[in-house]
Image (cartoon, rainbow, N blue to C red; front, side, top):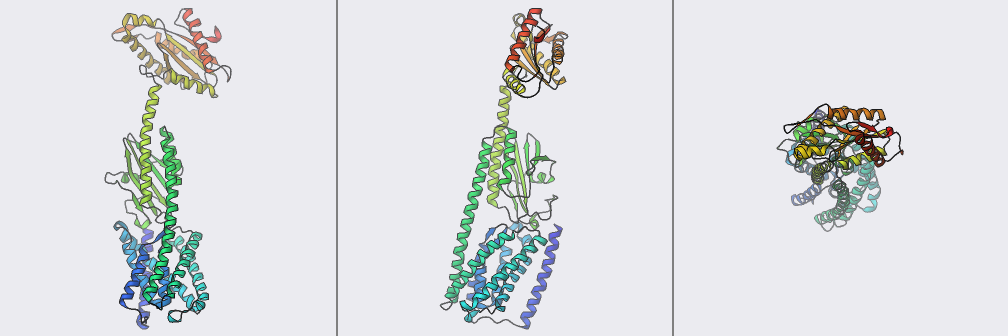
Length: 558
């Protein structure tokens, strides 16, 4: 921010010196104005200048006022001094009145002297070239004599534009595209010269009529250009945002929803740096939108999440930023768009974008992005419910272990992957029917719940074990990267976890045992998941139940 304060001070000093020099010249050589110039004519022509100043077209961060046509008309009919005075007064009024109150004074202090000097150069140098080539003005004007001088005028305009781009890029750190500027300047000055020349055609009838004709022609072309550009831009933006909304709406899970937004954001609005904060259940994660990776918390998000910030924050130049925006960014970052807080249920989203181009964002951009973030919040909230339903549909309510449906999904995935050898361990409680018949189903459910806890404790000891309740009193384990010996060891661990410690439930002390059957698949395509499960079941009943129970049997040893 200090750099831009230094630029503002320097520009005011230069502007003051230039203004003082022009004042001295005006005192030494007082200007003479055209006889037809009157207060009423001046006010009318100044009104036309202001009309074009305030009704401007913005393209690529540059404001095109199309006042060039009126200024050129004034120069050709009333001379350079008169055109400069009206143009400078118009810039003074425009710079002070064209921006919202929050940034009006900052913009005026920073931009007025620079724009006033640019305007002075833009008018003076091309007109000097026009004079140097013998260009006629006033009553001496003829189209044939003005042809060559107008060519010199245009060449000087483009040379001045080129050096303006160099200055703006080098000292103001504003990103202007020279090629884009040439195209638009050609269009603007082409239309401006046409309107000025057609206006001169009516000068003999009345200067005001001539100025009005020139202004109407210029205004018509400007409106056509603006409406066409705005329509194309609006349609393009609407399509991009609609596509992003559609991508969000078809997302089902949290990760899928977040990835969809991070993938689409770089295509929705231009930015140099961007971050998005997603807060769920008091857990905040901030992503760098470019890299799509989580980062440490930015202090800036704390101020944006304050309770009194509910509307988007839009800045167009670095000089607009307040002292509360403390973030280490390159000096050429100017535009800022911040959506402080979009909420839905327990989801809260904030986003910050910065860009090199001046005035890159407007209220329309903020509204579109806010609507997209509201949809994102609702979809993210819905995805949490989807995950909850998905988890509940695959979880046994009694033991809180995965159910048989989850086990089948997991088993098929493991058998399709290259995680061999794989072992399936199927087991159930011996004589469990006696427990239900003797103590009732309530005690039986408590036994199953306690067994589920013991299985979960064993599962924590082994990273590659997936445990589930298969049905009734039957349970199953799937061991990835598990050899036959490892599977037998884990099965024995389960058997002793049941046998060595009685079950204390509902005031009863129950000594229980389990029988276990194992099958191991050493390599891919040896057996399918269902075939391995059947062999483990066969080992359970043939090698376990029929062999006295309370034992472990492997299918390979039958």
